[in-house]
Length: 367
Image 1 (cartoon, helix red, strand yellow):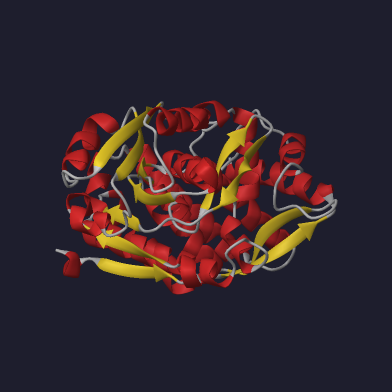
Image 2 (tube, helix red, strand yellow):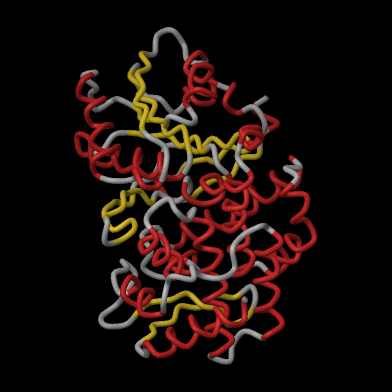
């Protein structure tokens, strides 16, 4: 089956690694074991994924590999130092050495926390990403961003740390709740908006197929998204330049997540609203056309994503949280905006009244 899989590569010199995409990857232990250097494995997953996939996944390993597990609570609200410590507890209790391989079996929260634990344990051990949500398959599992949240800011504690490989099994999306599927589509829309107009147009034509979980459509969307991200990461691994454009919608979106409480809004839902706000600001600055602004909002709505910020959230709430963002430079708020649909740019906003006006205008227009 290995020859039937789509294989992409993230080109990072000695840290390069493949992304395998296809149906039934979870059953292909020979692929997985190519990236395990010794006999110790710790699988990190959560209470939702474990009953569905963990037992079968563990059974795929050869008898000479000792497999241990760490099962964490499910949800963004648990992406913190307290639960990160549970991974360290499992590693130490099982006397794992520097040859251990951590495997993240789950969505973005599990992937981010497992990768951060791997970066820290004994100053760095190997890890593998096995993402089980669309959002993690198209975004967070690729590129080496790892970390946890703090009550004052999202993903403010973490490290850049690359996996040995990424295994994307499209069949797991059959058990994904509709809301989670839509949240993942938000990140897919992002790639079209920032760097690929043709892909954005394909999404406009195929959004219904994605929502119906058509495997061909999902595979194409995942492959294209991963390819776009891999290209950007290869050019700018640690986000000193072009990689920052992948944060389109995220600065506004992270503000929503922090204000509302992690987990109340799914990451992709907050990013969808963030993209709409960023598109509005792009139009206000005279870059994005009103027609293309409407296209972004319309596509998000068709994907069953929210397109307006929480009613309880004022412009000052956005500004407060946006000032605590790892991308900011000096006194400015760094935003990713659109010069046009399919072309992103980085904008350092020093005039807070612009954000105030856009948030207030967006609330009126969207309603």
